[in-house]
Length: 132
Image 1: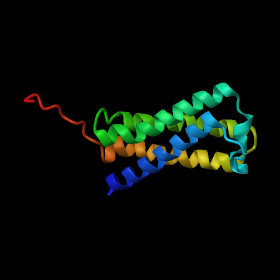
Image 2 (image 1 turned 30 degrees about the vertical axis):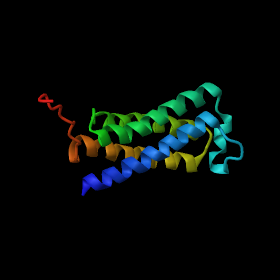
Image 3 (image 1 turned 120 degrees about the vertical axis):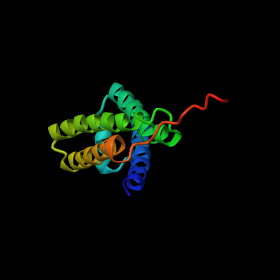
Image 4 (image 1 turned 90 degrees about the vertical axis):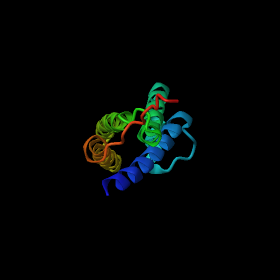
């Protein structure tokens, strides 16, 4: 059961972080109020956050999907969790309770993915057939 739940969470979180990362890079006009904080970040923060979130989102999906270096999946989950802790601290400094809650929920789910892929239902790396 853990395997299926973890896969669902990996896909959901992966697509979520990829989309948030793209938003950081594009910063579109007319974002809804819960995302209006994006307009207050500097260009460098947007680029760094965008790249990290896109790579992290891909890291939640691709290594496990291809079974090439699947250890990168829990590492991506841990890395994104650390990013979310930093984001929660930034939102706390601004009193943005709703954003803090979203960040902390993300941390909890990312922690489950990391633990799940390390202990509960690890993905085995693809073996190379030396016979050709």
